[in-house]
Image (cartoon, rainbow, N blue to C red):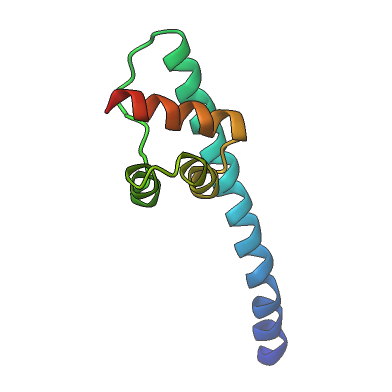
Length: 93
């Protein structure tokens, strides 16, 4: 009986991790969209858009397209959102 429960738990673990990853991606996309909406409407918000270190390094190396790709991978943002955020970040520096 205990073995059955243990096997069931191990079987559910990957499914749970996949779902958790999906929820995290959706949350990141939602946060990115919200930040863009706030920015477009000139509303002040306390939390700045966080640019991952890898993205900053790509920008410092002059690799904007790579920076956009990396930003998308880290945040789950759409291509358009990532382009806007990376471009805004470059202008702000």
